[in-house]
Length: 474
Ligand SMILES: NC(=O)c1ccc[n+]([C@@H]2O[C@H](COP(=O)([O-])OP(=O)(O)OC[C@H]3O[C@@H](n4cnc5c(N)ncnc54)[C@H](OP(=O)(O)O)[C@@H]3O)[C@@H](O)[C@H]2O)c1
Image (cartoon, rainbow, N blue to C red; front, side, top):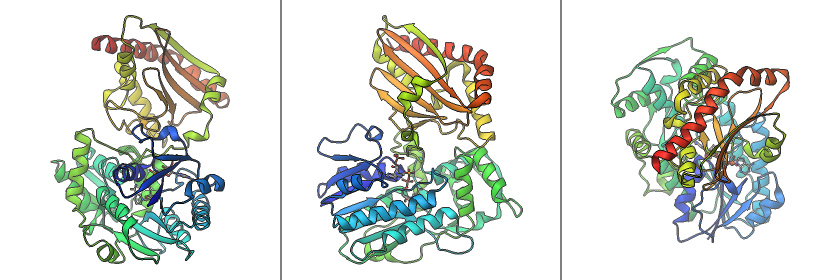
């Protein structure tokens, strides 16, 4: 069976890829927007195609001879995501038909269309409808609501709110019912979809027991050993609630708003096809899924996170833009007495729980300011305390480049009047640390000038601390 996996740099796709790589029945191909974002453990025999769903020629190349294709894509990072998602799905279906693909497996959102349905869910439903609109290609459309797994958006929101707020005032929609599902079960349904014998289009709704969001937060509190009190208030609007989520969880305002808008509608399975077509899959309970997620985090075993998609970093030519940067703060230190590997590991472990050395409080303050103005803030942390891969988010940065024992390049995703990068490079027995800034207009310039005194302390301390840490390892 020749199988093409799209979205393999995203939250679900990264996990499914790991599972499919172990499946001996299939010959796996990957379709990614940038090969660099794939983890290093991809076996050589796996064909990797670069392109996006708007490039029909590249898509054709990737879908050639494919039997089954996974569609795990959405364009939520873009303002016009509805249009992009419709065009993307239509392109995929058209080329799949041309290449005589037998089946598309799509994972979409769960819910029904009514006056309260969020724009985001409507777009996910439309994607499923487009993919299922041609009888020449079968589409297995799996629909999931709240997915619980280490690093999933829903889990991170519930965990952060539960951990941080002993007493929560919540919108009245905490009484809305949903049927969450563990990410490990989602992956089982996705993988087993390869073996379905049915030839017609299928819609398969998946979920464990029915719970309100209030139940989920109380149960999460229990799993974390915390007693929590929720006070639903009728007057909390979508905007106020989204701002609240933005402040107390790692999600930025736009994501919070899309999710809160979705809370108004029930997210309940509409058919019993999961049992009918996958009788051997018995989804774990919500409580169990929370325990699994918490353990993965404790054991530093998080495979993917909600921030994994590229967040449009590949839309930029970083090399050129860095060369054009107007402001540069460059510091260098001799490291001839140190092991390169230790210096590399030292800057690779920066941020997240490990912090930003002596001026960590200033980074935290910058993170709070970013949150207050609707940005991503510092709470995204890092996926693993030691390992980084291209595409990982690191506090308010995104990893754009890593070269073993040579270089780490971070691109700033905080709200900032311009574009900024932070680079650590080992060259000619020196550690070179550079902050690059390309300002937008006068305000961008004022921003940089006003930070010069702080930068002096922060960046001097940073390079010195990196060296000190490496020296301790030597
Ligand atoms: N995660 C959840 O909690 C959840 C819940 C219910 C349903 N789902 C469904 O599961 C599916 C996957 O979601 P996810 O959470 O894994 O998403 P995600 O983490 O945001 O990943 C999206 C993936 O799609 C790729 N992509 C986006 N636009 C593309 C394009 N035009 N061409 C090629 N690749 C493109 C991204 O590549 P880059 O890395 O290059 O950006 C990334 O690999 C979606 O259909 C979603 O509705 C997810």
